[in-house]
Image (cartoon, rainbow, N blue to C red):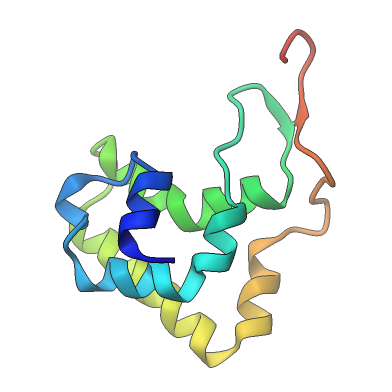
Length: 112
């Protein structure tokens, strides 16, 4: 995945990160996971694989967008993700998914 594809898929990624070399490396490293990732519904009661990938990989950038984190912290998190993946790809992938991951996202009553 290119950084342009990443930004198009997740417009919530703040603009001030778009030109960061680490974001391009992140997109390249995790492209296959990011293609599956999707933001969970506000009324989700159980998350699927795509929800967990979104929350773990894209979530920190979304939190930064709301001013609840710093740019430096997010860039460091992205680098940490890449380093952990390169050191132990299988271990990193396993760390993204809890044992109770649902086959499909489960939404609460009254949600569609």
